Image (cartoon, rainbow, N blue to C red; front, side, top):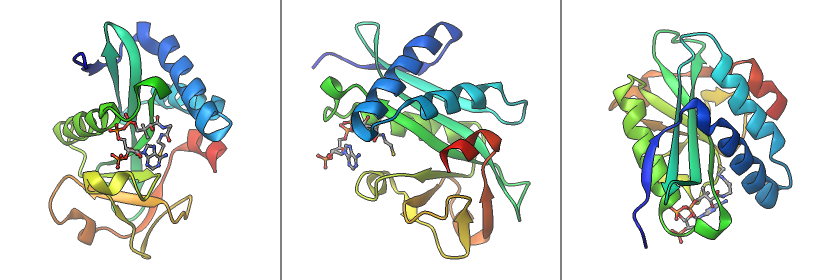
Length: 175
Ligand SMILES: CC(C)(COP(=O)(O)OP(=O)(O)OC[C@H]1O[C@@H](n2cnc3c(N)ncnc32)[C@H](O)[C@@H]1OP(=O)(O)O)[C@@H](O)C(=O)NCCC(=O)NCCS
């Protein structure tokens, strides 16, 4: 297989990213508009709601994307944490490790930017391979989902945090 390149998004990628998210999530879950709109709204939030958005390209064409955005720990507002979502790879390019490369590069970038932990709501079969673990009962998100997971970027941080993981307003539409 040809080499995939992964880089940060630029403004000129926005339309292609929207198209990818809508198509991939629609094909998989029957709806993709809310996820694409979420990304657009999260990009607009004022600092310190930093976002990290990486894209995977093959021959300069977009084949996958991953997006991270800041969250707030109600009991520990000084500890920076973020959410991973959405992650998508066009169907014809799935099962070739592109999703994994996006997750791994994305987590590296989150660590570089100072995030201490990353939360995700997703497949209990997919995310544990990167080190994500289910949340303890005393650490919970606004979604209160069995699919809520967390990965620590600073060793031991998960045992130091508890309470509500709050998601900014744009996420309410996905509740
Ligand atoms: C999830 C996704 C990004 C993985 O991309 P990918 O490039 O195929 O990922 P990789 O090639 O690195 O890994 C493929 C593995 O993911 C598994 N996988 C793919 N989709 C999955 C899903 N929805 N749930 C659980 N596992 C999934 C595959 O079975 C495969 O497992 P294996 O390595 O044990 O065979 C891609 O399938 C996708 O875009 N799915 C639709 C959107 C989506 O569900 N995003 C994640 C939301 S939480």
